[in-house]
Length: 336
Image 1 (spheres, rainbow, N blue to C red):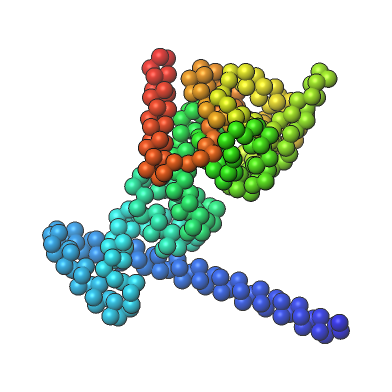
Image 2: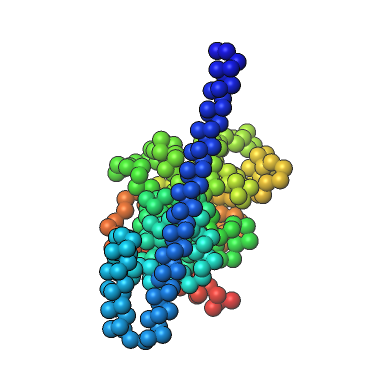
């Protein structure tokens, strides 16, 4: 290829990249501007209705406004959409927060967030989508999979841990994507995770990077093998994961402590924090975990579910789990 042709091709490539990037920025800016506009519309109607303080008047004015706006600007301003804009302004009263979130979240994202009743959960999912650039489908999946509730449940177990930061682990973990058959063994569980490693890392959460399987450790001439070793970029820690297909047993704590001590001595790099551990069990044996106070030693115990119940049963089960976890912590605090 001649120099002129090569230069021409390079120039074309640069221009294509520039145009595509600008198109993306323009779309993002338009989406952000629309979202902010919808907030202002909702806020303006809300202020007007409050000033008049008549519910019947409020209903009539929305119908009238919708009819006029649709004729001028199209279906975006149908009655149901105006009501969503009003809800939007009610639920997100701080315009600065809306402006920030709208840089990465579209109106479609907010339509998924608005029905989330728990204010903390709504804020959590909004920030999660913002920080991880989640699309609408992934945001919906996070909400349906009750990520907030499962992290909250894990945080309760870690309430007095000075080693493990809150928000890192979940309880339980949903491993239904592994499609394990009845009677599976620990090797089957590990192999299925490695086969679906990308999905497993997504379930673990942001920041986890796979390092090694069956990490070999030689201690006093004996071989020991850690099931899975990960690294958490934000925490700057190695994360040791042990898989158990039965109920949690107290002896698992000693095993994990040994692994963490070895990793701290031989694998931890300069600038890293001490390793932490996650023991995934079919059943977590909550009272044993509570008595052993494993969180103080940097160890988290969580259940994994290979099959998920219906949405209604899932919500009920997680609600019950959270209530029981809070009650255990309250009893513990009262005994002090």
